[in-house]
Length: 141
Image (cartoon, rainbow, N blue to C red; front, side, top):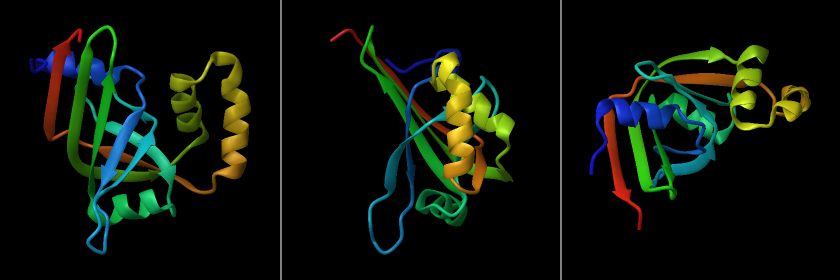
């Protein structure tokens, strides 16, 4: 059964690991990789990645991407969203802390932020405006 607007937005707002897909070049299929993301119902979704990483370069070139999240329990459910990148910003330490706190235990956040800020290079935040949604809850299988 498809999810209604409130259900799909609430599910997307939960801290799942996303599968980001972005158009590849040279006749290849899309680049699809796991990624942390941030979303609040009714707003824009954002991801943070290296500005000069393959993922970052492809997002900048394509100007849009897709993100799919799913779970297996208590029911099989997924949400996929696709849309244009509406802005790109240099990532801040506050955004790195925010996204890290979404996925890591509280006592690991500062250690990870310190590591990532030193080791991951120049980061950018890509904001997506959800345009196309696909969702379903298949129930307990």
